[in-house]
Length: 150
Image (tube, rainbow, N blue to C red):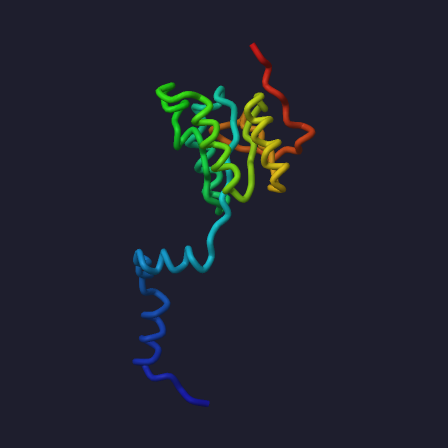
């Protein structure tokens, strides 16, 4: 049995307690290319627009990358472009995403988006957001409620 020298013991302790260096931009890019994260399309009614930041955070905390139309296009680009142009862009993002997550009550537009995702063979998950900002609760499609129309 070989005894450790004081220097070897000190080196071991130094490695254990040394602060971890922050990954460089190159390290981060390499990690992304080796282990890409899934893209999640965040489908929500425009009535839930004000929860968009919390929903983004929830998806990021789930180790996924959010694709959120309300973060990209605000509220139909403040109505400065025709709605159909924004909807087409949203549908293209949905087609590129790996999954579709539905947040809150289901509006007609969200129903169309989840229908597109299903036809494209993408997983669709549903979440109750009535407890935001405290919690987002996974629910089944059967318990997801439709939005009441005015």
